[in-house]
Amino acid sequence: MELELFSGAFFSALLAIILIDLVLAGDNALIIGLVARNLPKESQNRVIFWGTFGAIAIRALMAILVVYILAVPGFMLAGGLALVWIARKLLTPQDKEEESHLVKAPAASFAAAVRTIVIADAVMGIDNVLAIGGASHGSILLILIGLAISVPIIVWGSQLVIKLVDRYPSVILIGGAVLCWTAYGMIVREPMLVAWFEAHPAAKLVLAVLAFSIALAPWYAERLSEQMKPLTVLLPAILLWMLGFEVASSVWKVQVDYLMATTQGEYLIEGVRWIGWLPFAALFLWIRERMMLRNVRVARSAQQG
Image 1 (tube, one colour):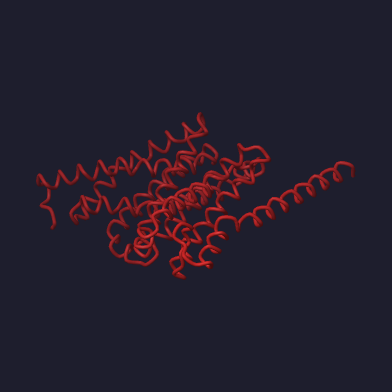
Image 2 (image 1 turned 60 degrees about the vertical axis):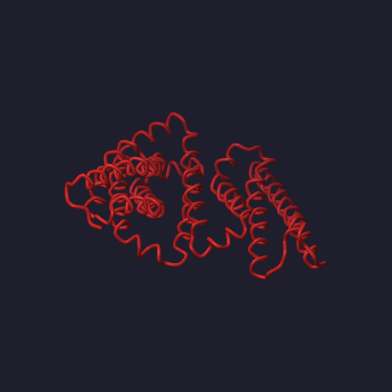
């Protein structure tokens, strides 16, 4: 039901939307600030401006079209996977050559930064527009007013994030965690998968750990010893292995719970599930060690030559 303009209900709904925008603008500010942190100082203000403009424009459009967007099969799943990729990209450390390239080619990095922000805003905007759409009672004017009010919040918040990251680099990890949690929530709410996740509650935990493991791996790898770095590959791989068996059990209608297995075939499948990954892990470690030894020999040959 359309609200009467400037009525008590209108202002009550507007206040609710502003409060929602205050919370949601924090996510936008965090993403914009994290992306802009790698750019030269003179480019950061432009990225904040265009990132904010893109965030507001996308939110306004999606708020109007949200009913049609959510009707697209697999949209929530694709959006969640995209957020995991974006989180990993944000948390991947840049070497000196890349940083030098950013300084020498600010135009290219500016375009990449705006593109990343727009993608993240588009994906994260799904949950946001659902909340705003509910509070607005169908009033497009209320949606647009609420989004416009959030503009200064996003701009100032982005600048604050840049300053915090410069002083406390670990703030980047918070941004990655926010993206990961949003991604997890979107995937488990995908209409095509809701019933499956309800039937396999353990898969939710595996999925959450998997999303965080994949996205945060570059951040942890930078801080792990050389002996521990293989964990950044092995942990997500093992989780995918386990999740794959959960999916296979529902597709092939077989029991993969050892305590509930009733046939020799089910016991065999469960055994493969728990120890079948060991040969692949050993092979990965062997290949990695061989490649490291080869790199050492090449480096020594180059020094002697």
